[in-house]
Length: 245
Ligand SMILES: Nc1ncnc2c1ncn2[C@@H]1O[C@H](COP(=O)(O)OP(=O)(O)OP(=O)(O)O)[C@@H](O)[C@H]1O
Ligand SMILES: [Mg+2]
Image (cartoon, rainbow, N blue to C red; front, side, top):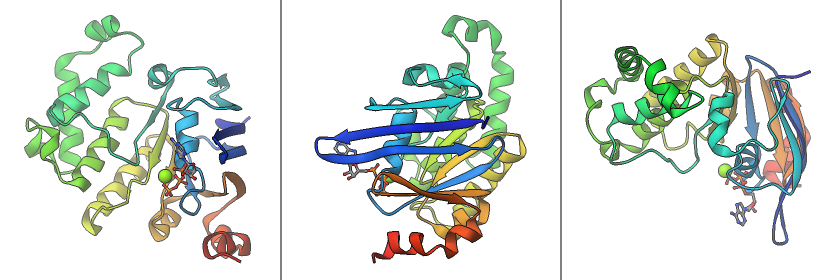
């Protein structure tokens, strides 16, 4: 059985079939890209998987566990973390506080986190993460002072801080300058090297094709194909989906 499996996932908004009987599997310790034209249903799929939106139907199985009914706030404790297409960090908290919150959230209860996490350890971890992306100098500044690209980095770090096994990234490269893009790429590849599994939505094809083991293509809410990047890039159905018939 695969590490993460989505079956028959479906969501309609009024008459719009945003996600329609979506099925796919993600292998453990892989980077899987999720692509499709604007409005294909990629973000909605993430929202259904993570229960930010209720689904009409469908199952999600993660590490042999049925997580179809695990609410959003419990998912991180089950080993799943995500970022958002529209950045969601705590603007008035410092970078350090944003990350420390995620460290404590990864524990299965708040009181347990209090005695389980060694504060020095957690702070050391935060320092190491911020240094890696060159944001250590802003550790005690409010997150709202960050640039757009820096905020995206902080969001990825926040996923890393939870120590989740499955990480869902919604357009980590969008609006990020070329230098920062290399940092994003390094973070993602480091996560894979640590044994994590990543599902990444992205419109930046050279970037995504370069890091992904497999690519899933969605069109009009549906699964179109899943294969290695070099195969997907050559597939006429994918070209048609993007360019029209
Ligand atoms: N909360 C909502 N209410 C109504 N319709 C929605 C809602 N969220 C998404 N949709 C619709 O569902 C469809 C899929 O949208 P979604 O945001 O999942 O696409 P996407 O593949 O992430 O696109 P993009 O690449 O532009 O981010 C679109 O037609 C969109 O307008
Ligand atoms: Mg989207």
